[in-house]
Image (cartoon, rainbow, N blue to C red; front, side, top):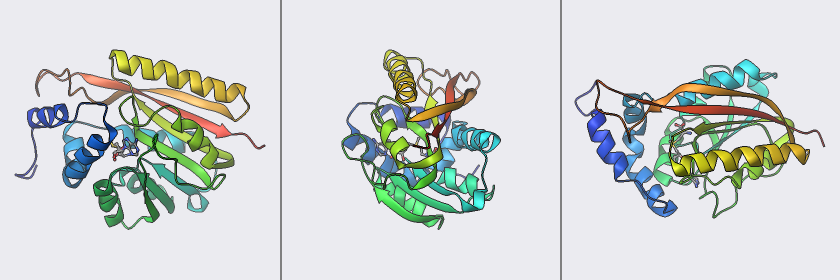
Length: 233
Ligand SMILES: C[S@@+](CC[C@H](N)C(=O)[O-])C[C@H]1O[C@@H](n2cnc3c(N)ncnc32)[C@H](O)[C@@H]1O
C-alpha cells in the first residue's frame, strides 16, 4: 500500500458524503474521485469487474478479438482492462462522469468515449452495433435507472450478448430496484426482445461500506450477474 492509500474508515466517510439521489451531484462526486477510484475500490474489495468479466467469458461463444464491446458506465476502464487480458480488443465506453472518462482515456483501449447521463439522456450508441454490451457497478437505484436496460438491448447486434451485474445491497431502495429490474428483464423476454442465458450470484460484490463495523469485522454486499442474448429478429 502506498502512503496515499485511504483506509476503509476514510472510504466510509467519503462514500457517505455521496449519498443522495441527485445524479448531477453523483457525477461531481465521481469526477472528484476518479483519480483514486481503482485504488480505493481495491481497498473495498470491489470485485464486480473481475467476477462479471469471468462470468461473460465462461458463458459466451464467439471470438473475443472480433467482438465489438460497448462498456456502459465504463468508469475508469477497469472492465476493458480485464477483457483485454482475455483477447477482447474493440471497445466503446460511455459514462456520465468526465473525470472517469479521462481515466478511461488513459488506458488507450477505447476507440470512442462518450459522456452521457443515462436515464435523463439516451444511451449514445447506434442500434444493433455491438456483440457484447457490458454494465458493471452501475445498476442501482441512485445510478442507472431500470429503463436504460432496454437501451442496452437495442445497442446489441441481433444474437449479441448483454451482460449486467447488480449491486445487491439490502435496503428498501435496493430491494425495490431488484424487483423492478427483474420484472423488466422478464417482460423483455416475454416481448421476444432477448432470451435469458444465465444468472449467477456473487457472494462478495464488495465490502458493505454502509454497514461494516471496521476493518476487522467486514460484511460483504452480495451481487447478481445476468446474461441475456438478443433475439435474431
Ligand atoms: C462503481 S463505478 C463502476 C465503473 C466500472 N464499470 C467498474 O466496474 O469499475 C459506477 C460508474 O457509473 C457511472 N454512472 C452512475 N450513474 C450513471 C448514469 N446515470 N449515467 C452514466 N454514468 C453513470 C459513474 O460515473 C461511475 O463511473
